[in-house]
Length: 321
Image 1 (cartoon, rainbow, N blue to C red):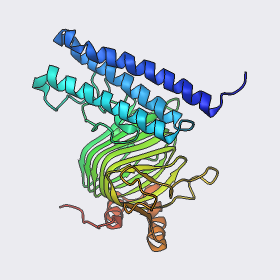
Image 2 (cartoon, rainbow, N blue to C red):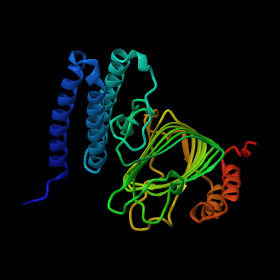
Image 3 (cartoon, helix red, strand yellow):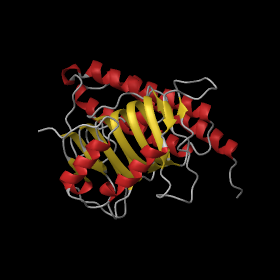
Image 4 (spheres, rainbow, N blue to C red):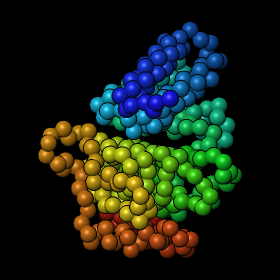
């Protein structure tokens, strides 16, 4: 059987996306007819379908045109927003807060539909990616590693990582024998985030005055300000509502695939001229990152790692007392 062309694959994806979107819209329209006792499970079911559709879009970026990707992303955004409106209207007592559960998949933890492209729906901590999500939430002035989560990792499946409301921290996500499928970032400030190699996507909504080390297939950055990045990405990175972003090549982590680190698409800048919101960093700053990266790759003393990390930030800060 002949392999599909990119056009054929794109058309097939469009048909599948349209059918699944209509099914989700039908479920959303029926929410008001359900008993209140059944709403939670239906919210979760709809969210998981939106998440799965977003993940399929992530995989399809290899063959669908950029314009189509943006349109699909806008439709995912609309689905996510409609779901949130229904939650607010039908469960007003819950307001904006949902119970957080690390192991049980019965309640959502993160709205993964925000991951695609242009203007995703804000990620809420009460929403869940999957039962394989590792959560770092409301942390401050610490070194965070996967060993700190008390999670039992297995070699036969990957995990998703969610960082939410973390400040003045060094986060090291690389660990031998652990595969990470995606990293999601929400409201991170004054942090060094060392992702290492990620199988899929790095997706963020709110990153300020931080340093990021990441190697991934897809990179989406929203509402980021004053961020230095060492990046290896095998598709064009996208930024939106972001500024003062400096990026350099991470050449040592993957030398076999094309690195699009310096081909960032800024959805707030449609002119032919280069976007003023990002630039390739100068050699001195790149060298500084290279010199200190081993601090986060190796099992160094935590106080040392934190001290080095906070001084490495675009605007250095000191550890809180």
